[in-house]
Amino acid sequence: METQIDYWQAHALLEWQVDLGVTEAIMDAPVNRYELPDHAPKPAKVQAVKDAPVDQGSKLSRTEEGVEVAVQLAKSVVSLEGLREVLAGFDYCDLKRGARNLVFSDGNPKARVMIVGEAPGRDEDIQGKPFVGRSGQLLDKMFAAIGLDRHSPDSEHALYITNPIPWRPPENRDPTPAEIAMLKPFLIRHIELADPEVIVLMGNWACTALLGRAGITRLRGNWQTVLGKPAMPMTHPAYLLRNPIAKRDAWADLLDIQARLKGAS
Ligand code: URA
Image (cartoon, rainbow, N blue to C red; front, side):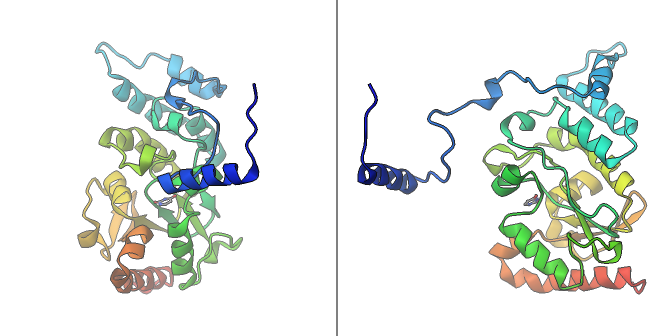
């Protein structure tokens, strides 16, 4: 029998849930996405690479197999669209099962500057785009200050943005070294295909993935080389939101990037 509740009861129940910390109403009952069968159709390329023998003699763990498959898939694509497609069909990373959307990239792929961030949060997971929450708003303001804008059609003034981790980690936890390693071949190919002039390593995970080390407070402000390109490590906007005092150094790094683009640094 259906139970009717009036407006005020419904309102009180909702308020009670908000007090408990509920931030989102999705369904009546929780869904364990880790237990859902994967019905997503696999692009032919993913299936072909998965079916190819990757184990030459020794028994590979699932993670090792995932890395091998990722390397083969990344090598096989010649366009950003192709890369997005193989990543969408890549099943070895469990983060995919807990995420709503693949967060591949945003901005203009022809931009001179490519930003590599960390991982999607709640807002990015919902919209399927990187840096659209509070950190993203600050990131947009930071780069607008040196004349760069992810929405610009002009490559001179544009930005292209991605993350080393394209699926939201549960509870925004840190990605594991195995997850970073498994997804790294896609990130490398992403940079090769976008072919920016300058890379910005936004935060520790970008540094871990592309430099093999973290420690952003020491790394920031010092040009590095990634795939033969100049790469500037910067403190992540989420850190700047918590530590506004660090904005001063971030501004110096932005000016350094601007100077490099003008050919002066
Ligand atoms: N922080 C990141 O590093 N990436 C995003 O996409 C969002 C927040």
